[in-house]
Length: 223
Image (cartoon, one colour):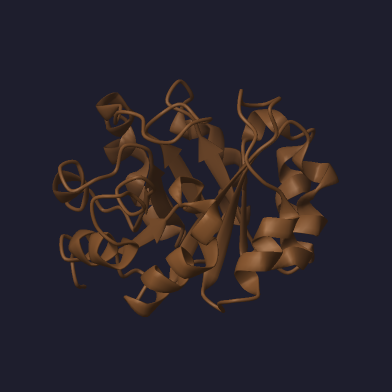
C-alpha cells in the first residue's frame, strides 16, 4: 500500500517534446521530481495512440524515479507484464478494460508492481470499493482520457468527500489527472489528494520543464 503521503506533482511525458525526451525528463528530475506519469494509448480504448513499453524502458534507463504507467488500452492483461518488465513501478488500469478486475490487480502485484484503478469523469468512484483491499492507488480523471491539454472537469470532485475517508483508511494514494495547472492546482491541494498529474503545465514552450515543475511544486502542501 502507499506510504508516501507528501503531495507530489507527477509530470506526464505525453506533453513532452519527444525529440528531446531525455533532456526534458532530466530537467524535471534535476528539479526534484520523484515520479513520472506515462500515458499509454492504443487507439482502441481511446481515440489516440501514444507509446508502448519501449518508451517506458527508455525512460527507466535514464532515471530511477518512480514510474507510473497509465494503461489506456483495450486489453491490458495482455501487456501488463511487458510494462512491468520495462520498468513500471505502478500500473494503472481502467476497470471496464479488464476481464476480471480482481485478477488483473492480483497479477500486477504478483509481477512486482503497485496496482491502481482509474475512474473516468462519467464513472462512479464506488467502482473501486469491491477491490479496496487490492488497491495501492486510485487515479481520478478530471478530463476524458485520450488527449492532453484538456479543460478541468470540476464535477468529478463532488463525490470525493463521501469516499475519501475509505481511501485514506486503506492507505490508498489518491491521484488526479486532467487540466492541472497553476490556476486549478491551489484549490485541489486542499481536498486531501496526494498526487497531481501535470502534462502541458510542465512541458511547454513558455518555460523550461524544470521551471514549470518548480512553480507547480511551490503550490503544494509541504506536509
